[in-house]
Amino acid sequence: MLGSRSVRAALLAATALAILAGPRPAWSQVAGTEGIKQGERFANAGGQTVRALVEAEGQIQATLDAYNALVTKPTTDAKGDYRKLLKKLGDAKEKIAAVRPKLDGMNVEGEAYFKVWGSQVANIGDAGLKTRGEERIASTRKEYDGILATLREASAALQPFLKDLTDQINFLGSDLRPEALASLKGDAEKLNAKGKTLFEHTDTAVANSNTFFAPLRAK
Image 1: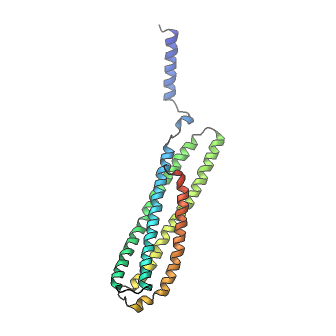
Image 2 (image 1 turned 90 degrees about the vertical axis):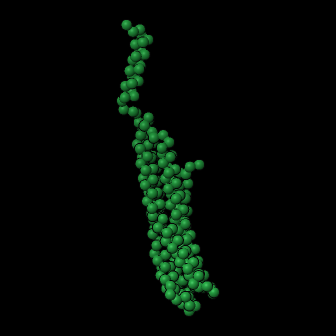
Image 3 (image 1 turned 45 degrees about the horizontal axis):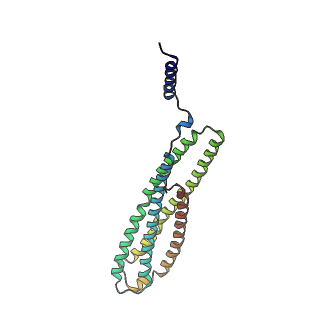
C-alpha cells in the first residue's frame, strides 16, 4: 500500500500529465522569437527589392547619360559610342526585369510576417492589449500596402520610360550623321524632363521603404 507521500506524488504526476495532454492555455502558445525572425526575413526581402529598384534606376540613368552625350556632344567615334550605348540599354532591360520577382518575394514574406504577428496577438488574453495589438497590425498593414503600391508604381514606370529612350536610340540605328544626332536634341530634352520626375518618384519610394523596414532589420 502506498504511503501518503507516494500517493501525493502519484496524484501530482497524473495531474501534470493531464495538463500536458490537454489544451494549452493561450499564454503558453506564444510563437517565441518567430515573429522577430520573420520580421527580419521580411525586411531582408524588402531590402533586396529596394536594391533591385535602385540598380534598375541607376542603369537607366547611365543609359540616358550615354545617350545625352551622343546627342549633345561632338564625337569622333559615333559608331563606337552607339555600340556602348546599346550595351547599356541591354543592361538596363535586365535590371528592370529583375525588380518584379523581388517585389513578389517581398510580398510573400510580408504575408507570412502578418500571419505570425496575427497569431501572437490572437493568443493575448487581456482584451485591451489584444485590441491594441489588432490595431497595430491594421495600421502597419495599411502602411505596408502603401509602400508596396509605391514600389510597384515605381517599378512599372521604368518600362515605358525605357521604351521612349529605346525609340530614340533606334532612330539613330542606321543614321549616325551629325544632322541626325542634332535632330534629336528637342526629343532628348523632353525625355530628360520625364526622367527627372521618374527618378524623383523612385527615390521617394526607396526612402519610404527604407524607413518602413528599418525597425525590422536584424541588428
